Image (tube, rainbow, N blue to C red; front, side, top):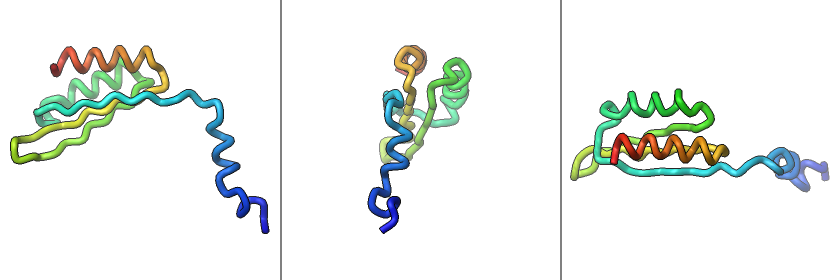
Length: 89
């Protein structure tokens, strides 16, 4: 049996050993994505090591957007989170 078939994850998993963990912050806001798009774009520009995601949905109670921030840089994530919370809370 070829080595790869016996241990299919070994080559890939070794690439991730020692990589810093990615922290995630998420919060859902009652708003439309179009109303916060510029804020999210600015967040991504100010903190380039933070991934910014937004996931709109349309509930019976009205529109809402789940905002997700991800980064392996804890300080940058904390700053970006504070920026978004200050603007939207």
